[in-house]
Image 1 (cartoon, rainbow, N blue to C red):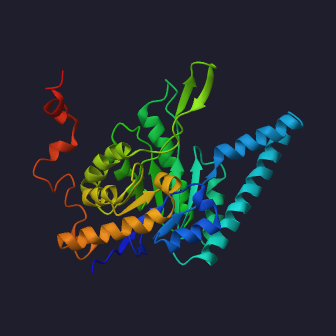
Image 2: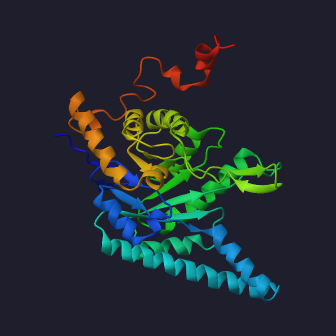
Image 3: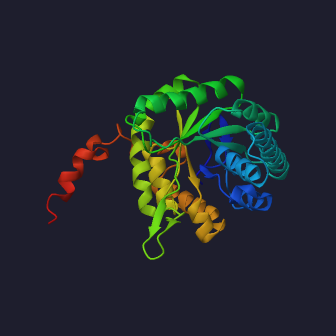
Length: 326
């Protein structure tokens, strides 16, 4: 019988499936159900810097516009949100035996260092740092934005002892270089990739709307490419691949590309937490069918350096496959 055990961020996991940070992991009952269905770990619902600032602004609008009052309100909202998150960590640790990874969603280092310390003290097994910096300033270079990432990461890694992973955006000039630099700062893993909010426009009502909040299977191809490349180019860096994993085939493909773990979200909303058990059963059957006893037996077999023609992971192949289409 196939053995599904793996490691991620130094944590021993019973299999490679992690439930991604979402509303699902903000509920203790759903976290318990995820463990029952076979999830190896959960990333708790994020604490958002943006949400804290938004709530503080709303309080300010209802009362005074005084700057000192706003600072007080921001501190109050921050403390309230933090306490809720601390309680979620403690409750989750009591409710399940699988690792509980905490998630911080931020775009600056304001107060997050202290927050990270308190989340560690609450019992979190690891920290997933979800940094979102939208490159919308024409005066900022790519290097400037990368330095912001490094500054936040460096300060947080120095202050806590639990392993830290960074959830990356798609928008880097050289993703491999960024991952290598994060490794140098003490980051133990990366999550590929962050799925941003996508705005849309209603042409009938002239209103801003939201694009699809759920991923599709085709969304997996971009992280598949970078999983295959980074797993070979940056040694001793764990990879948890996210976005577009909707079935066991997707799970297996990402493991073949070199992922250590795979994070699920959209499929669990659309089909339920029972999909975890289904994927694990199908993964085990596929391993038995192909003679693989452990995940390590086939992990990375289709990574960048492992295949005969690594160029298939590069854009240069575009013309080869599409030049005959008219």
